Length: 229
Image 1: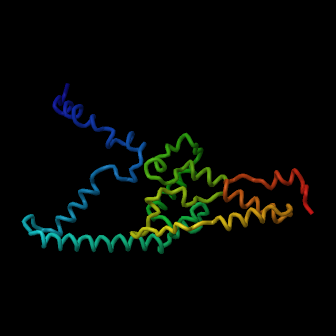
Image 2 (image 1 turned 60 degrees about the vertical axis):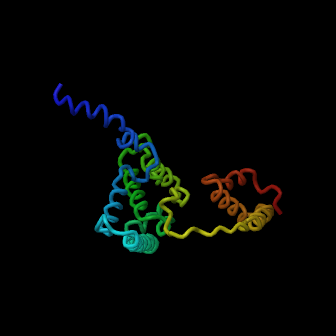
């Protein structure tokens, strides 16, 4: 057997860890694009540039780390601002993505755009998708986008993993007293009125927003306007 030492090294070292870095396994778990230690090593390299020496005292190291974090904070804030305000012309007329721009990261929009193009390839089938973007990145994959397009429905924020919707370093304040019960009760009372034409369409719109693509108008029309005045 040629190169026996190399074969032994691979069998005893690499193969034991194959599920940690080989795409056949990593594509089946949520990793958000982080499959190696590159990000950590890069951050460590930046820190060493600021420290410059390994013999500094606590005070000087503290000051340098504080400067580094301030710069990184500014860069992150700037990135969030661009995600909110800089709109890509490429996505302007794509109805499937119209509700996402300005609310998710630009990287996610690129993921979705690439999957949208893949979903339009000749003879695309759900079996060909693989759903890697959905499983590993938390972003809609080609088969989900194709389904939405066929139903003429846009992608919504609920289709995106929370990581990609984080465009602020500040947490959102949650009002413990927040409730929409008053509005919901008002809607129910309004829809109890006789089934006029406008009300039928209101029910249809309400059912679409709550249940998706279910249509109640046709069902109500088949039964006629019984009970109407």
